[in-house]
Length: 444
Ligand code: GLU
Image (cartoon, rainbow, N blue to C red; front, side, top):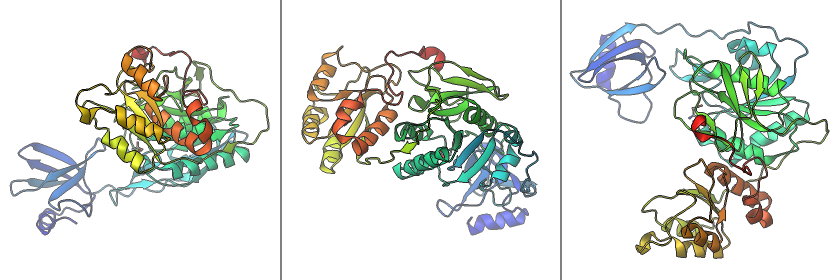
């Protein structure tokens, strides 16, 4: 609720929630749709949704001028599908999990409303009914920053069920923030996978002119229904144009930009393919292909939650590791500096990790080293620091992304404890390449 003072001000100007208003203060003028006030926060801050889709808060004071620009837009009608499902197309399951994709602004409440029914989705993107025969299932509705291994398990099991029931491919609509973690988790969890599993999302919701939701979905449908890929991939805008999407291996993908539509990049790996919005698939590098076998897809979905990912920096304190040991943590992935370094020779004992690392390894903790540089490969054979770290028992994870190594270690500790040390730095789902392939400067 807005404050009584603001309520009166709105009343004076005939302003209601959902109206377009302009607010002028000493910093300038802002225009947008008046949003409902959340229960938390200061009741004197006016929230508006700007045309670029972002909500901003403006502190109200006596000198603030508020004006009604126009009334609220008519409620968006629930659209009916405008295109008929074509017959004979590949059957694809779409698992809806939440996030910006698959939602649109409700002009009455000012909130973002989830699209859950297949018809609603088809109505938003009528082209889909001419690409695949979609079976849409909402399995959850969460922002991806709220996902845990419990959601990964659910998604993995739903994918296995869909595939075993005859789907030729699976699309997973997902929030983008942690999409690469889920993509990694599915890459490790799904065994005997013989179809494309395509995660897609949107950086901008479907009510915005520049939304990437539609093209990403169209390309994902082509990838899921018409490619012979038998891996987990992320499908998002390839560049700033609206021409094509890139398919990135699930274990090699990373969100590299907070807001650009081409935020996802393949790191230390070439893209698997580019998919145009007309359905042309341009394969770029080797991938696991569909084979004519009838093995069931199995979801090995257990995950050890007592694993942490630590980002090392000057002044990092080994107290963090001591704490994790005291709490019974079983694994840690370090995002070290450069080729895989951290402070073990500093004369400032409170920042020297050597003793804590020894104790952690003696307690049975598995510790892996990756690099916060992201691009390139860690190497324990160049500097004496890394040699010492490797001698302590820290496992150097080649060119694996820190997030992927984190997910892999949680997976191994839950499913393959005896072999976790041995498998951490061995490729099992495309997470490690024998030779770093990509020319990174052209990839970012
Ligand atoms: N942060 C939310 C998420 O990752 C919404 C943004 C998005 O979908 O990209 O689910």
